[in-house]
Each structure stands twice: as structure tokens, then as C-alpha cells.
Image (cartoon, rainbow, N blue to C red; front, side):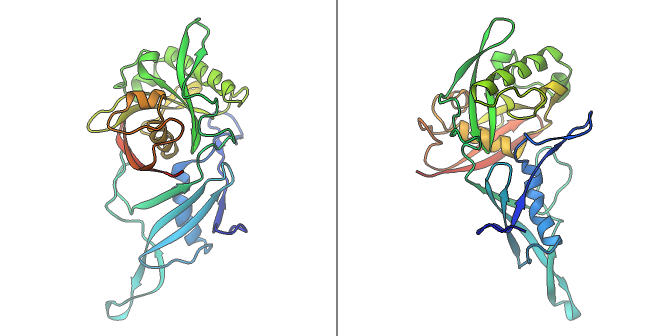
Length: 290
């Protein structure tokens, strides 16, 4: 449980290391795991379920972000088919997510207070874009955006990509992965994060024009140092890309189509941003307030 007003559960996420013993505490929030916290809290009796859905309020100990998770819950049929008793989490359903097999019950996650998790604002370098130098002597233009998580955004063109490549193709491209990792580390220094060698944050993604009705397309690197491109798109990365697409002057906003932009923060109002990726597309609604 949580002792903080307005929160039912506190959550701390750490990234398990696969090839070495230990964990990485620099990862920040994990959208997939956050979505599961609601059902876990109900199953463990931390939150009493209601019908037809249960709200679980979660405070992230990683970033301070507040999440409100709407979990579908159902009663059990009793005598005569009357539904009653203590509601339980409903796991079955028709909701589909690109990159995930099968279907399940929808989980709605609303996040607040996610701008500037490093404490340096949504643009931690103070600029919508910056140039980072790499060992080849060239400079690569990036946007450092901190919304839900700190991310480094670069145009696919600047990495020699079209944005249509598959995970298998990019995982096998060691030269690309080395370049992405070098850009990520240099950008992290500009964000004031120091030497991030061996850490998974900040994340890096390259962007290109959207496909199939999407506003923007991406290839999101889970960890370039481990030759690992994400097969789809993390929820936190989708949130950050969505916000970046609404901020004037960022790499993302210059490539995205069909969206308004503002000069310092995501354009005011409710904006749905659709992001295409190797497994299909994901969408996020960004609500910006003054």
C-alpha cells in the first residue's frame, strides 16, 4: 500500500540484467509493468474491487509520476445466475495490442506529472534540438525530451535508415547499434545524466514519417549496447514520442504530420498521437494544460 494521500499503491521498478547478475535502477518506469500493478493490487487485497471496474492509484517511486489504472472487474454467478460476491479481476476480453499475441481485458492507464522526471523540465538541455559529436567526427542532430522518461530522438535518415527496417535486420547491424549507443551516451551528458555506460536510461529512438495513417513512425532501441531493438514500442516511449511530436522544433515534430505544435510544451488541448512501429501501431492521448 501507500502512505501518501491520493495513492493506493507505491511502485518501484528495476530492470533485471540478463547476461550478468544484478539489476539496473536507472531504467525509470516500465509501462507494461505499471499496467499490471492494478490487477496485482486487487489480487493481493491492497485495493478493494468494485463493479464494473476498479480504479487503482499508483505512485511511481522511480519518477514521481502518478498513474490511475482502470481494471475491469466482474462478479461471479451465484444461485439462479445472479451475479454477486466479491468482484474479481477480469482477464479475458477482446482488446488487442500490436506486438502482443492474443486478446485480453482492456486496462486504461492515465498518467499525470510525467514532464521532467530528471528535474530539468521537458527539454532537459534547454533546447528543442542539439548536436552531438561522435567518434567518426560527424555531428548528429538529436532532441532530448523528458516526458515519462528521458529519451534521445534522432531522424532515421541521420542513422542511415529508412524507418522500414525489421528488428532482425537492425539487431544484426552492429555498426548501427554502436552508433546509436554512442549518440545515446553523448546526449545523456548534455542532459546532465553523466556517464550512462551500462545503464538503460536514457532510451534512444529514431523517427521517420508515419505509415498507415500514423502521425509518426519509429524504431525504438531497447538497448543498443546489447544489439536489441524493441519488437514494438514501450508505453513510456510512446508517451514521450507523443509529447515530442507536439513540441515545436524537435526532431519528432518536424517529421510528424497532422499535429499542432507549441514552442515550449506540448500544444494545449487533447491530442491523440498514433505511432507506427515494427509490429503495427500504438496510440497515446496527450493532454496538455497551462
